[in-house]
Length: 313
Ligand SMILES: [Zn+2]
Image (tube, rainbow, N blue to C red; front, top):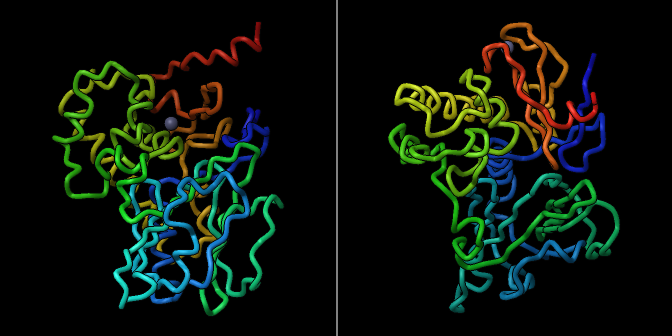
């Protein structure tokens, strides 16, 4: 029996939305770097008023600026521009976006000259370069959380200023992970997803990491031995790197399919675990669900799912 596979974004059963996490944002950054660095910005427009979280400088300040590089901070994408007028004492501006749960970036070779009309469909934001190419930021679902910021310093974005270490950076060592977990009497699943502790891992990759580490999502962080921490560190780095490698060279439009295909347990409730053949189970919460394999991760004992037990009463 296939249990409920439901969308983490809008809770619609049978519909799974791929939420961008570190590997996807890293791949989007690489794709955008390849396509767009060196292009000059023609205009930036919002199509959904709530997405723009800053007002000074205005989006019009990007007009005439050149895209210099594309970076990533956790799950934030950072488009770094050179000042529009090099002779003037202009500032280098960062156009930063967080795609949230239902957001995505679509590259388009030929965008209309006119700005998009606000309030129509999933379009949230559009950036057009002077040659007519550019990208749309779209957001599916009803909860609009996609965010765009225009700042001169990325640290001015609250979610970036508070980010924990990036698991792909050399600073993220087993010792650093050990210090993050020590004394923390919270479940490891929540710790892995906490952006203030480790940057970039969300619901999907925390499920994947814990499955690969053969660790219960409910295990208390403080209970990990140094050997457990070293093994978990290795799995975090390997899982994220292999997801990035799988998506290397793929265009934004292909990344979602690749992510879904590469997941071993996340979003696969009711399917067979590829490692042991047991059924993949889920625990649901108010606005999300986790997936795991009992044989691989919890000694064969299913975790309590309050929603499921309520339904069975
Ligand atoms: Zn298994």
